[in-house]
Image (tube, rainbow, N blue to C red; front, top):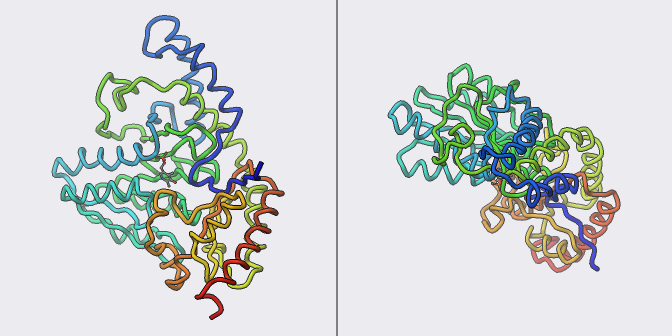
Amino acid sequence: MQRRVYLDNNATTMVDPKVKDLMDPYFCDHYGNPNSLHKFGTEIHPVISDAFNKLYEGINARNEDDIIITSCATESNNWVLKGVYFDKIYTGEKNHIITTEVEHPAVGATCKFLESLGVEVTYLPINKDGTISASQVQAAITPQTALVSIMWANNETGLIFPIEEIGEICRQADVLFHTDAVQAIGKIPVDVVRANVDFLSFSAHKFHGPKGIGALYIRSGVPLTPLLHGGEHMRGRRSGTLNVPYIVGMGEAMALAQEYLDYENQVVMRLRNKLEDALLDIEDVFVIGNRLQRVPNTTLISVRGIEGEAMLWDLNKAGIAASTGSACASEDLEANPVMVAIGADKELAHTAIRLSLSRFNTEEEIDYTIEVFRKAIQRLRSISSSYGA
Ligand SMILES: *Cc1c(COP(=O)(O)O)cnc(C)c1O
């Protein structure tokens, strides 16, 4: 069988087998609806409570009522933006949202939709460090601003945004603050109290939990109009029968993510750095943002003279899975805005390859990847009309 190396963990991750094992009994043995009054329902209560405990410990939420289960981070992001629209903008109180030009489409496209309803949206351009500074946010806030929505870590570059400082600015200005923390959970410590966030989104499948389940943290006392009205589940905040096995899975995935945080920052980071160092030894290979604050698993690499898509193809033939950027945007041939912002020339902007590791990658896989990269660069450059000409 052909060898397979998975280096696209920012798109999705393998479910940890321990997570899968814990979920298993809740499909055919303990399948009750926790809202039911009989034993099938009530026996689920401690299970749900245990999963919520793991979730709120993972982000240092004050209590389990602050975390609402959703179907994914896309839903969580939509909910915050549309909920704040209903609460503050539709009512005529405010009319402005601040976000960045490098958000995941779950935020970006929702903001575009809200613009079509008459909302004013500021898309902050990233600075030469590939992030947004707190002073940029401060300068953009007006008395009309209802919400600031800025990601914790970027899915393409892995660059970490100064969320604590931005949170402080928003708190002082009395503006609601949301962060999409999908790429931060399990990679860096996430603490909703220290970060002063009102809303925080995450998704289980980005940290070795199942796909199709996520959550939204809502700070105690902050109202948010529901997207899903119905049977008053989750204290009326998000109706729909609880997805018990997936909640169990997400809880365990969160607990494991905390357990492996040091491992991520030591072993996974060392493997990522080893890969980067070996590729940087090759002429005209660049790493985007490697001197800046990044999550430990991600590298965005640029190989002069080779289109990202061509490189992906060669890697894929050798069984290595990578990406040209966000999986949701890789069909988009626009130049990567992060690369443009940090000053890469236009030709380089089409050469980006994202490699994202996980705790399941081995040293041997990284050695193999380095070898495949070297050969692919040699081969593709030898047939490239733009390189060395
Ligand atoms: C993957 C991702 C999402 C979307 O998560 P889903 O669970 O697929 O909805 C949102 N934001 C970021 C930064 C992501 O990487």
